[in-house]
Amino acid sequence: MNATMKAVLPTLMVMASLALPRGLDAQAGHHPDPHHGQQAQQAQQMQRMMQRHIQRCTESIQRMDRMRDHARQMEQQSMREIERLRQQDMTRDQQRLRDQERIREMSGAMAEAAQEMSRAMERVREMAQNRETAMDQEIFREMERLRQHMEEAAGRMEEGLQSMERLRERIHRPSS
Image 1 (cartoon, helix red, strand yellow):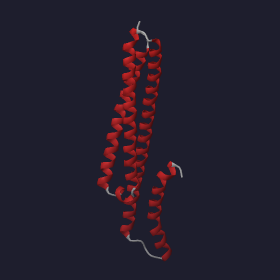
Image 2 (cartoon, one colour):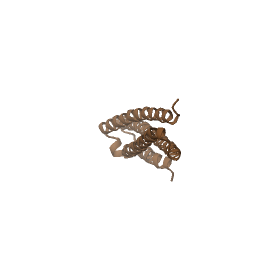
Image 3 (cartoon, helix red, strand yellow):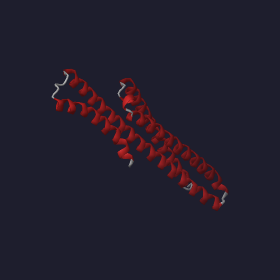
Image 4 (cartoon, one colour):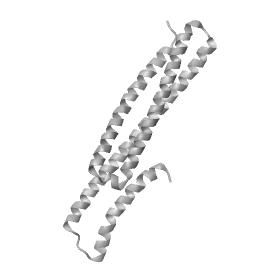
């Protein structure tokens, strides 16, 4: 079972459980409770909100994974530049070598941070897939608030990666 199916399966189960009681009532000739329709509507609305929340969590995870990959790529590029500078063993390049090592270390740290944020967002998504947890509106609001904070942090991280990329490129260019 792929990840998409694992993510969708709980939603399908909830939808089936919401539809099943009405189908049995109709077959047995029972008339639905007038409040049942309103409750079903509220449950469907909450289900749609949870589906959107889960989708946004998935998108955040993918974004953080891309940042992690970008940071790892920068780390690898810095390592190649460090090796090139070491082979040249020129005194004037020693400062550039140290700077490249610092960029490499920062890139590694950013990749680890993005990985940890991705794991945390996966936990939020898992909580949202738990029907009992997800149906509590207060918990849902807090999970959504947490997702938004993590998304903002991811945006700041992306800006930091862009700054590091510019630094790495500038350090990589020989002095004029």
